[in-house]
Length: 64
Image (tube, rainbow, N blue to C red; front, side):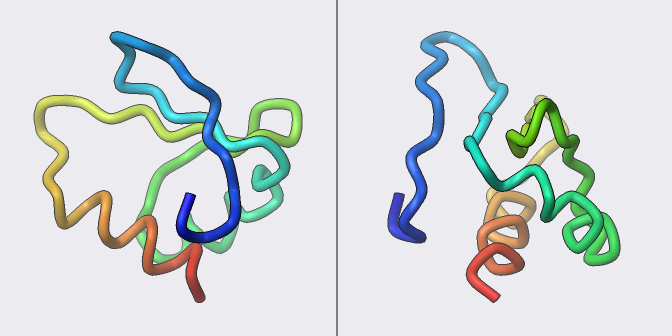
């Protein structure tokens, strides 16, 4: 939200989708962040092996 985008609410899910940012998938992949582009939405699916540092890296790349 602090980057000016509103993620889609998904209570109980570790999947985060942000409308309109799917085009950034390639840039994130080059930075080592694996996400997908689903119909123009950026989709990140977190799991038990992800760390806070993984989330920070995603946000840092998006912030530019």
